[in-house]
Image (cartoon, rainbow over all chains, first blue to last red):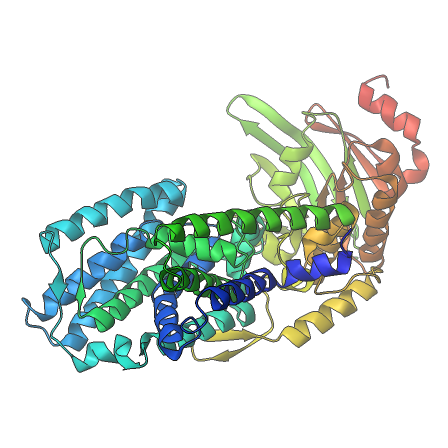
Length: 324
Length: 250
């Protein structure tokens, strides 16, 4: 019988579980790939991968806490990258302008998901299932199915995702900065309180005057913006975007959020947890490669971790509920 | 008071409400004073809900008057009634379970300081003030940072009533606050009602349990067939009388 205080603490600090999992994974891979897993190059590599996924996971966590989902985010990511690339190559725009237009587009795509969901009063899962395919199709149309590149070593793009050394890319620091802003926003501001409230009980929030629809639209727009930022990271690292990139991004970001303690029923969760969830997933990916395992094990691993995380979180919540 | 309000904070006079050809209310008059609990009782369909919805601004009466502290008023929306201090505490809709008591208390009324576009929460003040309020209404054993999901049903209801009172509720409308609660939990809710009443709040209590309503109310307004059948001081009517009146035996 676990101490009730301990269970309550886990409920209050949902990040504990994912931290524990990260520790286990580090120990496991250090044993399997002792010389390489904790090398500076590999730490840089998996943190860069964490940034690309994790910046979207920050948005996913906030949207899930607000009680909604966006599974179109991967198409938004690919579309935005393609558009930025086309604008500054065939379009001949200066890079900074192409980036600003790109981020405005990605934010608008997020916002439009929210508008459709709220106006039609349908589940956002369904809305974004539709818009996922719509934007995927438009991405293919815009790119004609080919990679779209930005100018090589464009300084503005490298600002977001350039290589700093040892596989550490600039995106890591952008991600951490955005994460800190999001953590403060969610935990220490009025709108953060409203985000939890509309996800936990939208009617109660409305009853005391919280502008619930606007709060949700904010969260939808934010994940759109962050999909665009993630796209910038990829452009910075690779100098190009492919129309097929990002098709797993939404589900991976949701997985990272859930591993990090977000409740799929809304109203509870943590940005830190989602960021750590993204780190855990990227670590597993790089560790499996270093350990020489076939990479398809990655999906299986992550899937199993999601299941374990949900089962543990649910059973703890139930036990805490029964204690009173 | 000398203004003809009989000391009522809220009074309705000759309210009538028709939905098309259906007469939902006719000739409904009653009032509630500061520091008074009025039990509004009646069988299903007696018109309690319609009367309450008019008082809360959800419906406009077909005819009749609403007076607030002696002044005739009319509401275009529930928000107007709420701004005046007429606030309903719904059983399930009052609180966000995943937020702490303090964050529920200050939801949309957060103490904050503004930096640029953001309003930063004064968490210390939120928790300290919530702790004071909880002690003030006699809930001493709850920590302001406890999530509402960890509270019992009675505690939840007590916190919801306390919140409504401390955030401008001057007439609290409680819709069956004790249904589905144990005896002990019910007593907890009653003691909160006593507390806010002692502080001068007016309370209208809709309740089906005659034993409960008779215990807590100062006056009992009985509705039947869309009209007020009787308006009794508690000492003038017993529980059995009430039950017989409601059953139509008397």
